[in-house]
Image (spheres, rainbow, N blue to C red):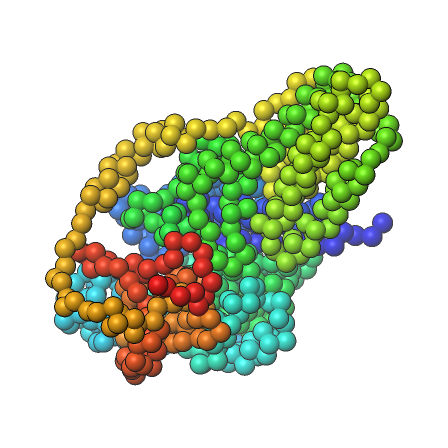
Length: 635
């Protein structure tokens, strides 16, 4: 018997600074769905996840908590693992970057790269803020003081080791150009090429001396290995890579990775730094890196400081594990950010899960029990109406496979639920309750129920990758033709008002904060009136940001490439203090299109992004309430 083909899939390792919110949890559930599906196809899957546990931020958090950094990350890693297990994720390996074997291998990798001339010693130089432990250039200072805390700064240097990124840049560019599947989606590849690789790579700092919580550089113990060289190498150390000797069999079997699944905000580190590290080590590159979009709360990124964080365990308490899995997988578009809220969860649970799926299974089992004592067979009394259902039942596995091969997981789930919807329609078409009234239609009735059971079972088997507990429950109740006496309720409908009342009880402070924010208003100085004709000269359109980067030598400016219809305009905006370049990409924004071009910090700007500003100077991009195509006129 031939060996199974291997499939090595990883998530980004979660930063062990606290409890993961549902946006963080989405990634592990997405990876689990892909891993489960590959297993169902006969692949020998190795699924790795874990925690990133070093760095200055964790050192500071541990100090604030009055514990050692190791005690802090032990607690955080345990909480992350608890959430991953709660969500029924089937990972094979949970790596921690504080694992002894990982730390030792990182030291050996660092030494190897140093010995072969890829790493050299240099230094950071600039104005240093002691409380923030950060360097700044003169142009980044605000009134000569730290831009973060406003305190005094002093000229200083910090010794550091750097990796020669430019040495491998041309080789990486050629690889990306000859392997179109390497970076997905396509928009992420274009961003990396145009914003980082083609303009030229700067050497990367790979050690620090200003904090101690990290992997020590064993030949220079004043230094610790800086985050990305430590964190990224987990993908090979976790499967037994040894850079100074013979690697373990699991490494030879599984590397290169078939898929690195990561958030779009860390795509640069995985598609530029990580491939270059691998080239320097003489190792093949991963086959594919997929930068998934974010799951947003309302219309903003989840943030504890904003008070808009949703946690998986709280959602599970209300809706159950599989309902939460269904939501985060089904509601996330392939490229654009998805949105989650309590209201949307209730709506989807009631419509898709309780009604479309749950009611279908319930009706089918109840009728089979009532009319045939729970056991039916194919009596062969077929009618024309059966053909469409049976054809879709036969076709759905290939439709799901087609979507999953392209990592379009939401679309794959939609195909399965299309089959369930067709089953419901089949019930309406055949009207089993009417057939049951005529003895001569008994064989036809049994055939109808047999068809339903076969089609629902086929859908339930496909559902295992996405909703494993629900799949198991359905198949156990249907039993291949002998159903259970009484159907189990799969999903109980919920009342939105009752749910929101419980949510407010769960988060009373958050509810009061939201009420205060609703009552807040701002009055601004009125500008001179304009005529309708003057207003008509301004052209506003919806734009989609397809790439964004920081403007060099500027503390405030971001430069965005904005798709407006068939054109792409370059727009410079002073919003760097409110958005990172990474989180700008993919946003739909409102644009003043016909503003006269001007240069800001030496960079041409061809329009203006519209923002709102509160009394504290916080900015928010104006975005369409509903999804609108790039180029849509705002009128």
